[in-house]
Image (cartoon, rainbow, N blue to C red; front, side, top):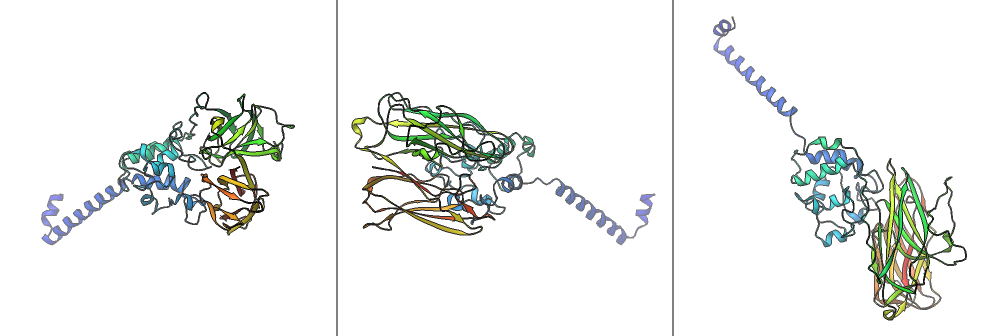
Length: 451
């Protein structure tokens, strides 16, 4: 019957029918192709990982973020790919190794992988690559990390969609562990340690533990090496002004009581000895300068961790003290702890806060470092008074990894002269930020050594 109808059609009608069939087939093929098009793997990374965990206010979302001067990395749509692939890492340790943020086909030499990897001690034993990312927030899942690794292995293309999205179904959290720090060799120093402890979900925990040094004769410490877990805000080693009222040895003490109030026991008795924001730092005093540690000296190890995840994390810290022979010590160092408590930064504003500290005797400064929190953009230290008045002797723009600047030729300050801290903050929050002890507050401290 159909054949008869076709035979009876005029050539024009038959041609019209054939054209309609061809158009219909092409439309179906186009629809089928559209329905089966593979989504680029990087688009999935952007939408399901970067947008959710990285391109956030205060992190990698805007050039106005206070931390932008430190990392210089925007991870927003349309910018992230060009900012990641083939770009040299800004971190000084990674830069010295010529690591790229993303090195196509080579995840082990991609700095991004080092910053998110789940493996125990993925980089701490060889270089200080800074805090694990995302900083303070939920870590990426094992599936997300593996998806990024596979994307890099496959060439880190902007258009290729060869990574199987089923990897993202692995929702197990990626909780990086610490690489144990080997103690100094016999006769070259000693190690103190904070054993693993819990940081509850959505909580900041700051702890202290008193340890006595193991030396049986005076020791002269010229180098201090630190190692700590991810999500650590700081590790500071304190001595005590008076040994008459010491906390119990080897008992972990919390800064906050169970009701949230501050437990100020012994804080006013502290003397800064070493450490700071970067819990994986390693610094050395100039030749011939050392801290004197008397036998069995009581020290307070102070660790601060913040946990913004929905699961319990662990804290753990090591401190190595490396010694030099007494005969090579030319000057015994003392410590600087110059703290400005007068901090108030209005919401949405950039503010520079200045304070001057003077000395009542000749002071020879041999090392300076700084401590502020995530709203800090720039920490400058200037000489106050004398012929070098106003001279900048220290600058730091990275609150996570503050510079430790050593002066082989000491900065000599006469009585009445001193140091000025000039610190710029950008408060991108909706509330006034003041001095305080949590990571959401701010600080302004000059740490250092002198004789």
